[in-house]
Image 1: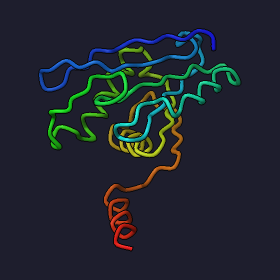
Image 2: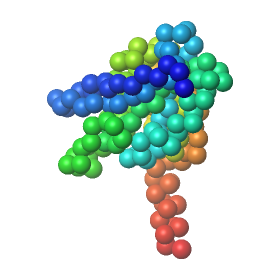
Image 3: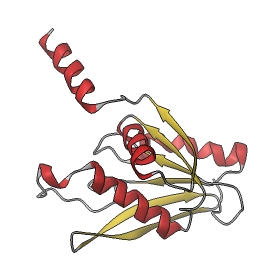
Image 4: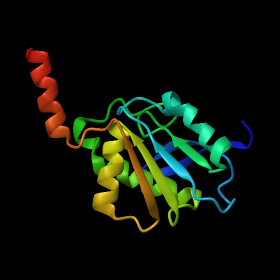
Length: 156
């Protein structure tokens, strides 16, 4: 795969600085709108979605992968309590990454599983002007309904 860039973006939250790891396949200055991939989990890094890098080969679009805070090559925070891990935190991290990469004004999102839930929340709550398209793959529409369904399955 040609033209691969990796790096980290400083992410400041509640006075602490963390690192968000990212990988770009292609060139963000090519004039072609990039696709940002939101992985599932939470806690599962981007690796299982790596075949989406073929979208760069087939469509020349830049593809951005990143590991959400707490997993993969991004800052791990095992001592942070449940209250720290909010949708708001991860939407802030996404905003920060888009700004860091200079693509906040023109991008597409693809979210899988939890990443789809994050993408849907981001699109509906933040109304990002730069978001042109969103694709949700195998994602529940509601965490409370998902939890209820899982409880029913476990009870069975």
